[in-house]
Length: 223
Image (cartoon, rainbow, N blue to C red; front, side, top):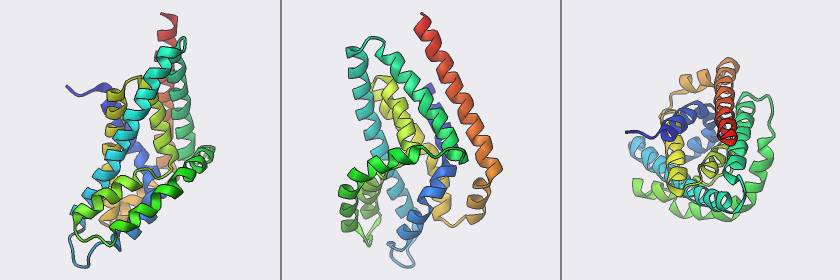
């Protein structure tokens, strides 16, 4: 039976693909130049993205463990983390719609670490085979991203290393379709999902989900 958190994170990943296209479109373009000419791009794209998703799962495992420690040490720590998660999901909705871009400030903090990690990716390009794209994707999975950071707060609020990893795995797999389509050159889909109306609808759905998370947290605090 599929985990509810996994399914929810998968759906958010699908919705968040709107942001992925905007932020990672240039990366996908540069990625294509690292692939041998006349080679089938699909195996390289899959390897890169599975590496990226692996990094998400590791990050979810770590944040879930930290959430467990926090909830065990702080009175009503789990409630606090869940409130934080609901807040970040709401901020994510505003971020995707373009109504408020405050999450970019958090991305700037991530850039401090990213500057030290990113140079390692150059050791794997140009790709000699799809296997070289896998560690390349693992490294690029740590690219500073407000969308990823928002979902990580959900992993943090899970209070479990396993649940944290499951949430980020679901999220990563949700972003996979749009990333593959973009790499394969389906520009019409890219243009469609970046329209303001589409972004606003997805943002409203995320706001509803954030409200639902807040409602569940309030119920838990009452009991």
